[in-house]
Length: 151
Image (cartoon, rainbow, N blue to C red; front, side):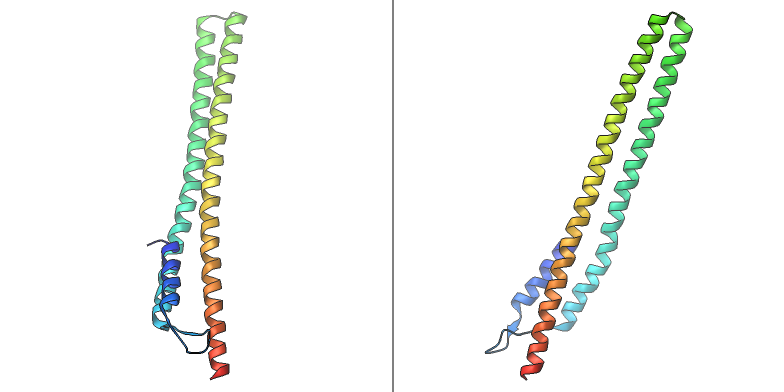
């Protein structure tokens, strides 16, 4: 179960709770709320791990792209040197290696941006979940305080 599903269960628990007559207060089973909060605590670190894994994978992909680019450039330079020392062939090889390098850098940049967007989206979702949970807890506490003061 993910964090959003747990938040939904907390909201369902609050919505399904009995209302105190003639007030906006509700009676909530504290054990159920605490169990759901504990589940949320267990789930959140896993979502953080997934975000970290995505960033690490992105870095690995960038490193691999750089290694491939270096190999391609070395291969291109070596082949051009072996085949002919003519200026035109060297110019073509250099242009080709620069095009390849430019293409690889663009791909690496795209991968990095996508990974950052994904991580940002996950963190934004987590932030929204935490805001919902905090609002639900604050609402419950306010209702509990009102119950105590009116009782």
